[in-house]
Structures are given as C-alpha cells and as structure tokens.
Amino acid sequence: MQFVKMVITGPFSAGKTEFIRSISEIGAVTTDETISRDAPEYGIKPQTTVAMDFGRITVDDDLVLYLFGTPGQRRFDFMWEILAEGMLGFVVVVDSARPETFREAKSILETFRAYAPTPYVVAANKQDHPEAWTPDDLRIALRIDDHIKLLPCVATDKESVKNVLLELLYAILDEMDA
Ligand SMILES: Nc1nc2c(ncn2[C@@H]2O[C@H](COP(=O)(O)OP(=O)(O)O)[C@@H](O)[C@H]2O)c(=O)[nH]1
Ligand SMILES: [Mg+2]
Image (cartoon, rainbow, N blue to C red; front, side, top):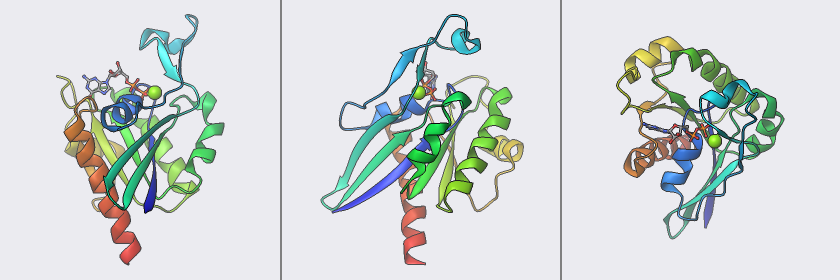
C-alpha cells in the first residue's frame, strides 16, 4: 500500500475546504470556526478553517491519497510548515472571480515551493462564477510557468476536483520515474 500526502492550499475563501469535502470518502474532518464579527473577513464568509482540513481517497488497492487543507489566513501560517512536512505535492486553489486575492495566491505558492521542491498544480476555482477569469488569463496574472498545470475547477463538483488531483498525481508519479 502506498500513501500519498497532498496539501491543498490557497487564500482565504478560495474553496479549499469545499474541494476536500467534495471528494473525501470519509466525512472530511474540518476545523472551521466562527469568525469574530469584528474581523475583516467576516463579511466574506462567517466561518474559517483554523488548523486544517483532512480527507482521504482510495484510488485503488494499493494507492491512498491523504489531503491536508491549510488555513488560508496568514495569522495561522505557523501551521503551514507542519502540514508541508512529508508532502509529495500540493494544489494552490485560487478564487478565479476575486482578482484582489491573486497576489496572495502567488505568495502562498512561493512559500510552499520553498518548503519542498515537489510537483504542484494550480486550480482555477469557481469557474461557474460569472466573473471568473479563464485559466489562461489567470496564468498570465499569476505568472505561472507553461510547464505547470493550471486547471479549471469547480470545487463543489466532485469530477472537477478529481481531475485536478489526478493531474497532480501524474506529476508526482512522473517525478518518481525521473
Ligand atoms: N460557486 C462556487 N462556490 C464555491 C466554489 N468553491 C467554493 N465555493 C464557496 O466559496 C465559499 C468559500 O469556500 P471554502 O471552501 O470555505 O474556502 P476556504 O477558505 O478556502 O476553505 C463557500 O461558500 C463555498 O461553498 C466553486 O467552485 N463555485
Ligand atoms: Mg477552509
């Protein structure tokens, strides 16, 4: 049996918890807490992930994926390095309809790249949103290299999430063969 640890990261409200919840075969363990009414994020959504999300996917008899979602707010970033320990790859989830978060998404991407030189993919999430930027436009805005997979995603749709995870898995397996 092989276990593959993947980290799901990205800015606050990008869709990380939803992404893991859509695909996990165990009821995803989340640590969402109510945000203080005084906090600046309260108006965006009233809940936030404080420690991590956790999910599991059995791909076949000898391959199991473990997903660890990060808290998106910088004030919890002491958790990031702990979650990055032993990861074989990561997904950066971006809210394609909120360009004001793109800079933060890029900064999180660079932070995780510095933790470990693993493969990663970028999920252009919320493609069902009328104002979503296309993956091509997002690639330019975030300055993502051509050899990195940037995939359209709707985190509420299991098939869409599966596609993103498979692309990351292929990138990880490629790396192992190399
Ligand atoms: N329309 C739409 N809403 C989404 C999508 N992904 C997440 N959401 C919603 O966006 C909000 C933030 O998602 P959440 O998973 O809590 O973000 P997190 O902070 O990254 O964990 C929630 O209300 C989700 O239901 C998506 O692909 N499309
Ligand atoms: Mg969350």
